[in-house]
Length: 96
Image (cartoon, rainbow, N blue to C red; front, side, top):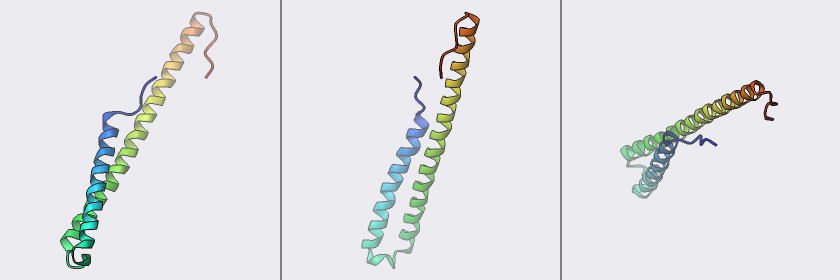
């Protein structure tokens, strides 16, 4: 059986985890630093890193979905080949 998880999916989720942890730290640091009201550049950076984390999760999910679609297509092609060979040899096709 083929695995539908490749390095690309893993990398996107690792990037999302690291960016999410960094965003959480920045938001907590911003809250502790003068109540967050005087640290406007820090707030901008914190929200930008949060956006990067959200984007990385989205790309990870889309990459995983595309890989699963490719794996399903590959499996369907393998079944079609096996069914053609079975018909050619006079055997009945495999059940799905």
